[in-house]
Amino acid sequence: MAEADWKVSTRAVIVVGVIYAAVGIVFAWPENHVRVWRLAAWLVSAAAFTTHIGYESFRMRTVPSRAAWRAALAVALGAFALALSATIHSLVVASTSQHRRLVLLALVIWPIMTGLPAFFVALAASAMLVRLPWGHR
Image 1 (tube, one colour):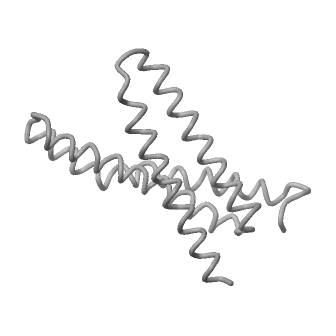
Image 2 (cartoon, rainbow, N blue to C red):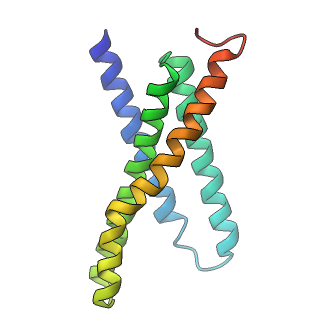
């Protein structure tokens, strides 16, 4: 049973990570109303984040620390995919060598910069969900 749970949770991390990357890429395309699209991207990402934490807490009955770890992994995966997309884009369009170096550095920095705060927010949220009257523990 534990192996089946691991596969399902791993699949959830990958799916949510892909959602984050897709939102980051697709919502950056429109050139009009950039602020509205940026806000929409934040809202969709927040919905994916809270849904993932809820899924881990209620459906998978994951302990808060593990739920936070998995949510943070999904966020870091999405950030890595977004940085990878930016790296590929910098190779396709004309960009300076300094810009390419910075985008390559983003492959390491973005996952850490987004994953760490996501872990602590998810940990707090998961811990609060467990304490609800209908919580799993």
